[in-house]
Length: 182
Image: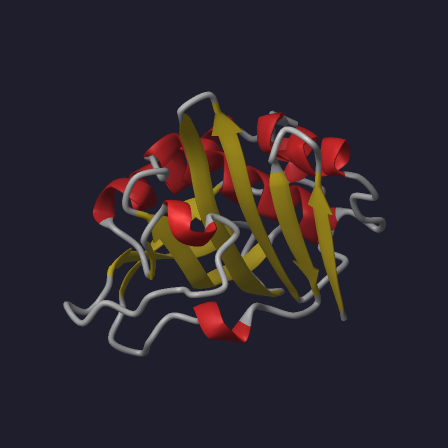
């Protein structure tokens, strides 16, 4: 179990949880979820749970998102991803977010972020996808800094960290996961 934290002088920040999840960002049982099935490849998950949180300022704007989940092997030759599509109307704020006071960060998901997650996973190469079930159990989005494309990038990074025997050792490596297509 490890929490890795990275930052740089430009204000970019990332957290990666390995074999644990940020308990303060866990979704409630009332969260509406959908199961999406993807073709799987030869990747093998080396962890049971992973979460990735990023904050990237760009001039006067920024990107923010947190996504994490729990993996389990299944008999079926597929990658089943259980994606939060909507959260209860009672907002739960994520006070420990990397965005700090720059954004109002809410625990949960929205339908447009579910679409972004699916798009991101479709862009991941087949060989990078393990066979099994991934339940996305923690998620947080910013009122200002989040967008579907961010959650697509987070979903790809989540799968890559899940299947990597190592872990990112620098902010550059953590951010490179967001851009990865393999």
